Amino acid sequence: MKNKMSLANLIITIFLSILAFIALFPFYQTIMLSFSTVTDVGSGKLFLFPSTFDLSSYKFLLLEGKVTQGLIISVIVTIAGTVMSLIVTTAGAYALSKKTLPGRNLIFNGIIFTMFFSGGLIPYFLTLQKLHFQNSLLVMIIPLAVNTFYLILMKNFFNTISPSLEESARIDGAQDITILVRIVVPVSMPIIATMILFYAVDRWNEWWVPTLFINDTKLYPLQLVLRNALTNMSQIIGNAAGSQLAAGTQNIYGDSVRSAMIVISAVPIILVYPFIQKYFAKGIMIGSIKG
Amino acid sequence: METDTELKLQSSMTLRQTGNRLWKEIVKHKYLYILVAPVVIFYIVFTYIPMYGIVLAFKEFDYSKGILGSPWNNFQNFNEVFANPDFRVAFRNTLLISLGRLIIEFPVPIVLALLLNEISKGRMTRIFQTVFTFPHFISWVVLSGIVVGIFNDQGLYNQILTVLGIEKTSVLTDGPGFTAVLFLSNIWKEAGWSCILYLAAIAGINPELYEAASVDGANRFQQMKAITWPVLKSTAAVLLILAVGNIMNGGFDQIFNMYNPAVYDYADILDTYVYRSAFTDATGFGFSTTVGLLKSVINFALLFGANYLVKTIGKEEGL
Image 1 (cartoon, each protein chain N blue to C red):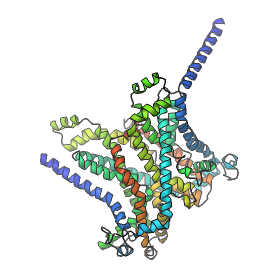
Image 2: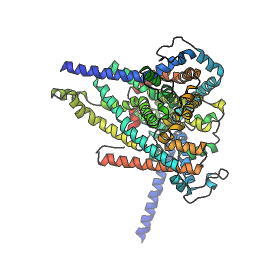
Image 3: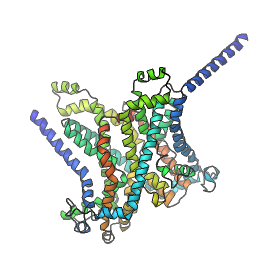
Image 4: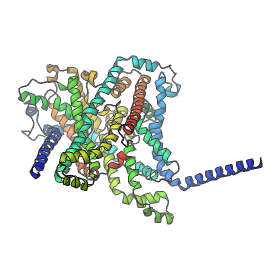
């Protein structure tokens, strides 16, 4: 019996290991490709290891300017957007966690409703256009300030804080904003750290809102620079529609440059991932689904 | 007569009293209102005002006149939408892709959670979870770049085929092949993430239940069926309701970054169609708003329908 159980364990572990390998291999291969030279790519090897450790793709991207510019825009938007989102979400979630607040249910249900019904793309586009968000970096900050899931998550966390903690300060005559800043925020560091990570990842990954509203290529965030480079590739493939001739004429040098671009876009996420993992592993996401 | 006026007087007093009390409550909470104000303004400006723009579905949009000033056009947009063959293709594709996702993608995180729960807790489980969850945090722009790179002419997939002596294929321009890539790559990105919710549900199970069951001679499969599955079922029910309420969406972020004109017949969904008809083909904002409205309404109805069915037939808690 004991033996049989560990055999089952072994089989499951091997199976999951294969899946893990498959999940990671595309990333590995992309990184290797980004360090490969033109001749390596052309020779059609499997890119398990590059024969040389070649940085010319990265050099090319840094000198070319678009990627550097996108990088700067993305960093600005990520920092400003995360600060903005954190302040608005924390303040709102704290107020909504107070059951005595008149009108709280109305506000909360109004927010929940937007998760399931929306005006759709065109009315959204026209509204933001009217508010002069077109070609403004603010479009990647203000209209994305609140994520409903994160707001609920934070509200649920505040609900778990013992009221007695705030009582004494209230008796001393402190008002709500002071209590939030002085008492609630210091004991809510785990959820605040989670919010910072989630919002920062979202802002960094944001490509849809700038696709809609940013036409000025100087204001492109990194995701959009990358998207344009990649879309060109899939358009080429699409137009070729299977024709070997056309597909074969693709710029081969492009493969390692594109891979380098992908790596640059993903590196910040890889760097913060261990921290993200630490928090969601605690099961902090549960609140979001139970609402 | 007298009592009547007295009663009226009394009730108006209580009304004023409750009014006063409410006002006092509001004043007492004024700082909380200041705190919640940005959130309220955010939702009004960025979700509720656009909802008002839905009236465009019933209007002939004229850019110079704006949403308000554009003339009504007697359901002309709806007639145009229903008569449009591209709309029908997109509608069909959205349904098929979403159903495919429900059948193929939806069970994967459940199986994954069950498997992770079976192997001994500890370092291995954590490593697997770390690996499987990682792609969730990478954008579809980046992931589709990687996926397209794998399946293009000189990509890994065709290199493997060449090594095996099989002729190269163009997966991304072949409808069924592209659809398969959609399902697989979405599993790659999201299965590990969805799995967390199931694992959290499993973590709430009292371990003594398993011990008691194994003392009673239940094997691991029986334990899984009798203890783990009933707990997972309620999590699955909630996620299923949400998924059904998303049927008309079909996964815009992924498809928009991955598709190409050669697979429009299979992969063009309502959202991608709305985007192109509004911004690329300039079919008109009224037309696109109408498609968006139909989508929202169907989704909303499906959500409630699924919630009702799960509650009554499935005897689960629902939303």
